[in-house]
Length: 478
Image (cartoon, rainbow, N blue to C red; front, top):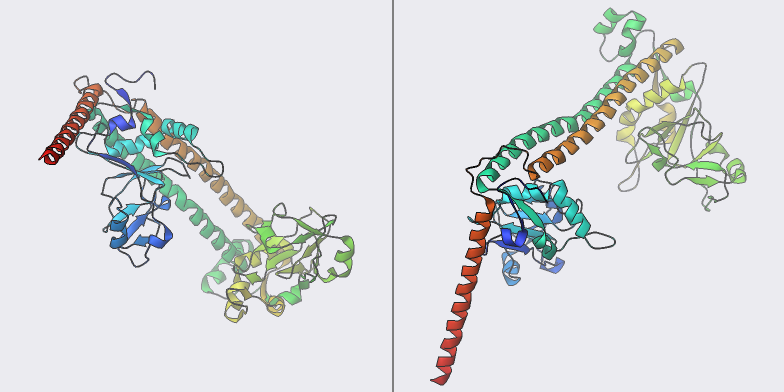
């Protein structure tokens, strides 16, 4: 930390914290010491956010156990530092939660006093700054899960600005970081908006509203409610598909490392498309042709999982392989090309009416629901002309591409905002966030007072101990 601003001082944490303050690990509380009906909250790593208190955990102990273990009760304003990831070294202020609370041993807490060299509010920002995070990471230990010891934390060097400047820095950080948090919250809400947008597009597509202008029947469409356009029909899947068939899996393990035919499972359907890179499995050509022939799928077939939850994950079989096999939790819908466009059928199934319509009738074991093959075959498909189906697919593709573009831009914006927080903290850490005032008392004067107060306290403690020993010796002689 060379080149500190004028009036600033570098000091280790144990010298910043005065003698009458606290820097300590939390308490060692085992499972046997906890009580779900207790009134003392046990603050855990999950509660420590990156600058904010998450208040997520639900662990308790009773007051008797807390006293028996000589636990340290937290106070509002205590700084909590996570000694384990993720991320390692994140810090937040304890806000007070309306009940007694202690914290676990993997959380270090710091309690300031009126003469602390750095306020806990600023110290929180320092811990969350890129520089200190880097120091903590470089000094962490552990092979499987990194951790940092309190003793190492105490020896890390922190920049100490003048007290008056600290207040200006905290005020400015609170202001700009609040703006960043507002931007983050707005960005985080956009994916849900896009999800609802995509669903509304699908609903408009399968009801005929998306192609009202294309058909030229806007007046008629405005008058109807849930009914389909007059030019549309409502057909069962069995009527418009050349095949509706669920997959199958032989009892004996059919999978073979030398197999060449891909075998799809429900977990290979991700975000409404096939992801065969995740846990790919194969069967031999012989098994595929003999034992699994009824569940053969071809590129262009539309798939839907029928065992859940969740139900209704949908995908179109890709051209990655010429033939595929499906397990029993997946049903394939093979469109009759003379009546049905397979991409239109895909969007109909993505809209979810099939699942919604059969949900009251689904059956299954505890925690599981199934859609039967009969329900799949009898499910209703709103059927416009092939030309209108193609137009629907074109429009849905267009709107979805638009939503995908926005989603990609949001992810980039979120990454920039995350970097912005670190940039602001780094700027504050270097003393570049607020102007300096030559009239501020330099930080070295404050550190000198803390050191003198510590020396005085130690001297008083030694004198008191010496007097106590002398008193004991006198008592023995008498």
